[in-house]
Length: 133
Image 1 (tube, rainbow, N blue to C red):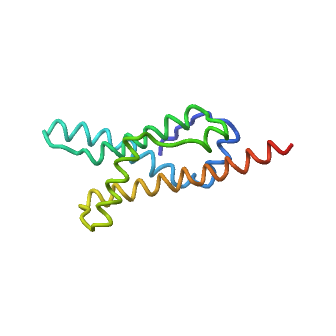
Image 2 (image 1 turned 30 degrees about the vertical axis):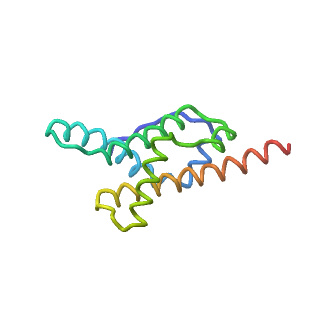
Image 3 (image 1 turned 90 degrees about the horizontal axis):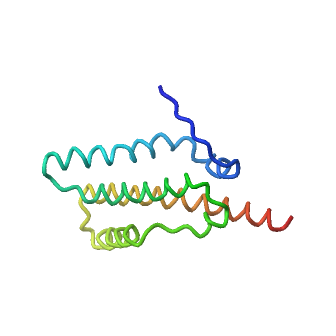
């Protein structure tokens, strides 16, 4: 198995530590989405749902790669487009009209929300500990 190393601040590494076993899955999905998009466009079909989720993954990765401070992590929000798509999926879920692809997409949003939630909790704890010293 190949190994990729990225440099991130120590405090971010500590915050991400609980998710180490999920990185492979998250990165696989992130990489697979654009590849599937390319394949789908070559076949002339539309795959908007996957593109939306891929965009959200990219937003989060770009944010994390920017080496955010604890304050920036606490205040992080995904784009309006991602939030709007999530609201649409949640409404369709309430109406029980989700397609299988939309159900998978909603599951991905839930995983991302959980990841960001945990990051914010850790960042808040770190921020409070730092500001009290």
